[in-house]
Length: 132
Image (tube, rainbow, N blue to C red; front, side, top):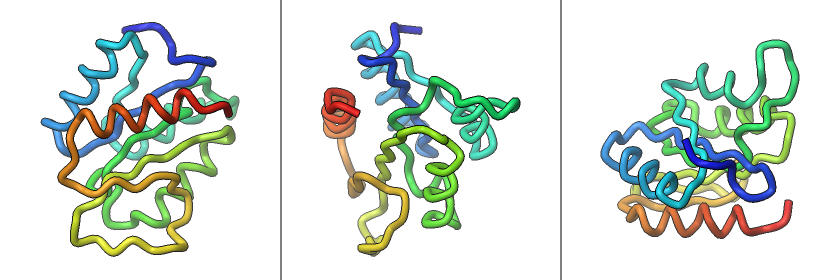
């Protein structure tokens, strides 16, 4: 694993697409960033908050696709943000046919698929560079 992101930020990559996930994780780790890859929604929640209820230092930027949290995309984003009990920036990758809603709760950035690893990586790096 690499060093932690600037300002102690953590990165979580929760993508159902194994090809995109692998390439994005490799690209971010090649920059020396510590990336956590949850296996499912329960694992993601555990990474955001420890079982004893204390706030985890992981998870300040979360990249996920709607397939990872389908079918309750809107509710899950809000639930994940609440579970984090800390500032959490959520980048959601959505299928082109998905209608985005102005009231999409819990999502900070929406990227439409297909998207390149470079585009997602640039978005993540830009978010990490922003003051919390």
